[in-house]
Length: 94
Image 1: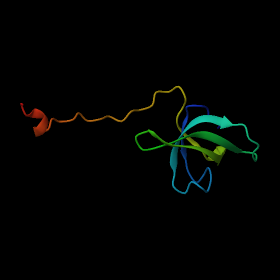
Image 2 (image 1 turned 120 degrees about the vertical axis):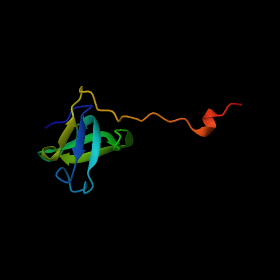
Image 3 (image 1 turned 180 degrees about the horizontal axis):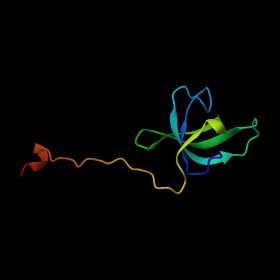
Image 4 (image 1 turned 30 degrees about the vertical axis):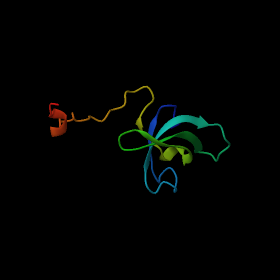
């Protein structure tokens, strides 16, 4: 699988030993750098559990070890936020 701009990937140790702790990664672009056969440089953002970008990075990974979670162009699921309940302070009348 060759990732495309906008793809969200689950990057684990299967992609590279540096990812002992898996990350979510949104691809900006595939870098045009010389690599070993089956490996690729990706530039993008590391995502937190809510899908927000927390760190921009370039990673060197095996294409076969990448797992695509969301393809570019597909709508991403959004976290549902609960409505805030009014507090006693906000309900006071001046």
